Length: 602
Image 1 (cartoon, rainbow, N blue to C red):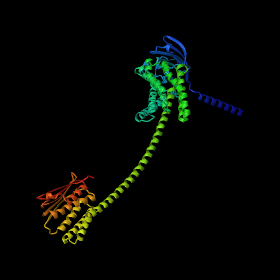
Image 2 (image 1 turned 60 degrees about the horizontal axis):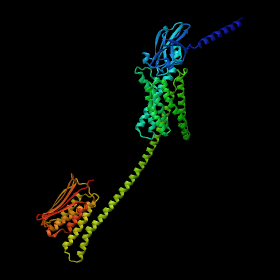
Image 3 (image 1 turned 180 degrees about the horizontal axis):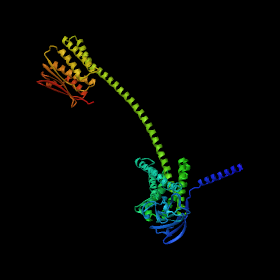
Image 4 (image 1 turned 90 degrees about the vertical axis):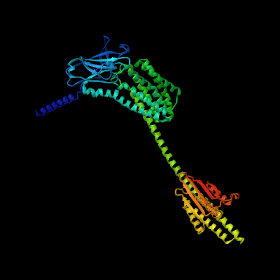
């Protein structure tokens, strides 16, 4: 007996557990209403949802249409209910048992646009009743879009939102909006690149940027909810942008493959320019817009085999990808045409905005990738060029250093040769003259001493001018010292005025020529003038870079009939060698030899 009771209790427990699990597995009830009564112009007719209104059922300028539905509830709902409508003409408002629950946005139906915005209205519990409930959906229909009503869903608010409204809102608005923002960003970037940089791909960037902005603008049709502005202007802009994006997109594809079809390009440009005018002339009607899109669709169909041939020639992965995207775009366009033309497709989301946006983003990614590759190549070329320039600069520096060193060696060689010439012309000449005179045994001892002194002076002069730190002021100072030593107690006074502190360094050969000129002028004054006073002046004017040298005596002067002797000719020749001017002034008051030289600036 106890065993029987145990079995009975186990069976009872299993039954209770099963009933509890069954109760826990019952899903909240969502009612799908697909039968409605259409109230239009005081006439009523039964329709099946989704339902599409034909053009002759309403005023093209705009008219309110009411769909009446019924819902029977066996009892009052335990949870808060909501009403969800995927699509309802241009705009819609909902009433339950005479209670107005509002629509997609505040305001009168005529001023609203909710064409692609799913409706979700959470209702107060008081509007429902056990038994038959009357639901009215009043829509505003005009010729600017497809009109009608999708199925109406009624159920627990949370369940309905999670299972129906959220996904509908994502596919119809959220995803389209995200793609639109990304497309607009790509478009602005492409236009900036196309306008800013001149490159072979400039035309492709411009077409791509324009296509992106047109597609982003046309997608406002799906994301715009409330429009209180003039309805026709908004509808014209959205429709014209949607249609013009078709030929501009094909121009972008042609640029992507870097092929030129001039006649087809001219046709596409003219087609794109004519579309806004045609949309305005036809009142932005959706049915006529479909006809205006037909030439673009046919052109796309024509392009499929053409682009296929290009892809087969290039055999690139991006080419195959773009061909597949074009075919998918055509398929999406056909899907949307079917959705607009049949009642069953009324509440289906439009595939073309999504597909077109995805195609543009894919194309943009490829174009930006190409640009990044081009920039990388340019950067590598710049780096290679920089390395080559640095190598060339290094070679030029070495060559320059070599040339400078050769010029220095050449200058030193010229200085040595000039030194030897001066040694030959000066000291050699004096020694040769002394030898000739000494061979005749007729030269007085005083003249022998004079010749030896001239040779020694010339030797010292060469040493003063060829020193490592030879400067004109120092060389003139040495010359002054030697002349003072030679004069001894002679009744001649030589006054020196040296003002050469700002004189820049001069070449050694120039210093030697100037020293010899001053020495020769002094020697002439001592030997031939008969004067007792000799004035030597050396002055440098830094502001005008002018050097002045003069040797003046108070002797008897030169005879006019004597002309210019060898000594004066030598001095004039030395002045010419340095580029200076030399003047002689002689009279009863004495003789002056004056040199003036414009010193070259460094």
